Image (cartoon, rainbow, N blue to C red; front, side, top):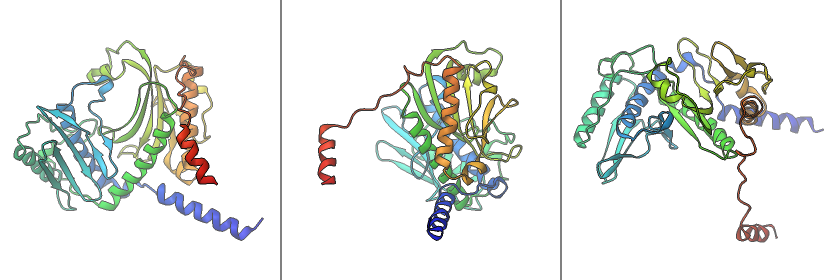
Length: 329
């Protein structure tokens, strides 16, 4: 073996991995995270107000669009409206299908209250009436947007680093769900600030009556939920999570891969540290192994029909095969 070549290859591989899966120290980027999350809540609440209701609150989630976050299109009278955040250009945007648009800039010295005031002013200038509840959700800090003068940090590099990580994660989630024959999707949830994949096996469940309003409409279908969460003040370690609903009997004792993934009873879900993933030889494969292990529990312990939910991809068309043959000649 050529040791020098092997070491150079390994070093390049580690460098490439660190670029795609960088360190994500919560303490270092927490100020930007808090400001950015408040802004995602603004457009997330706008989507909740404008979009027709969908099962499991799917009318409230956001999506990634290549430069940041977006609501996707929402109906408004005879028009369609979309909103988003561009973490590279540094602004929040509003677009209407009749060609009108507006932007709200981010700078390192603008507080959430300033951004909120501008966002409201832009809505008025576009004649958009949107009833947005300005109190943050799923956060310890419930200061209304209009009164939040303490979250005033937006470091573009920190926002972009986080966006790069969740973009890489989203790609793996999309790859995994492409094998699933059934209702599925990848979403960004502005409440918990996580990127997630949902798989539904088509089975309805009795909605719980003792878990509050939101969960009553969230837990009415059997599903697998898995994704990435960047951490918060109480639990700053970023990581991957997965759970099955309903929780299969004995699922907590089933071996899960990789071996640094484990069941956490206090959370009632499987967890896998981001640091362990990003430092392993193949982060993408580690995530796929994690998702595959949990999906296997759904089949072996949760009664999911694996065969019925296996998606058989289309065979290559004759034209594609012909082009491939010509290219290889």
